[in-house]
Amino acid sequence: MDGPPSTPSYVKIFRNTGHEEQLAIYNNVVFKGTQTLITGTMKSLVLSQLHHAHKVIQCTLRLAREHFFRDGMTQDVTEYSRKCATTVFHANIAWER
Image 1: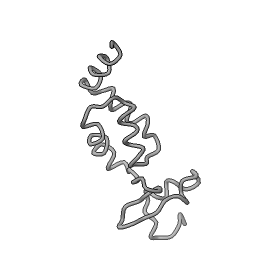
Image 2: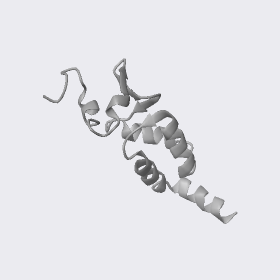
Image 3: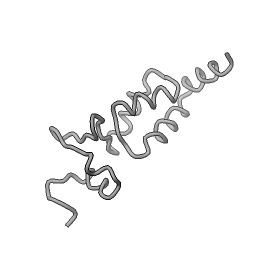
Image 4: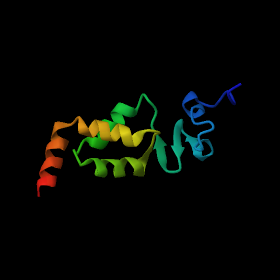
């Protein structure tokens, strides 16, 4: 058996990763400390909302790390930001200064 029947499948994926004991469930939302666990179904929505202000990658990453947890989040945020023409444009202007 993979664990107690009440353990959601998205929590089971963190078994043996070092994160399992840090997870807590409150009102069907999974937390790692004060960060909300982002599952695959929420990834696109969260990335879109984090990136809404078109900040440079480091600002978006800092915001993401303050509020959310997801293995691979750095790569997800980086790839999402690099696909945004507005963010790339502003990053290029900042480098030219």
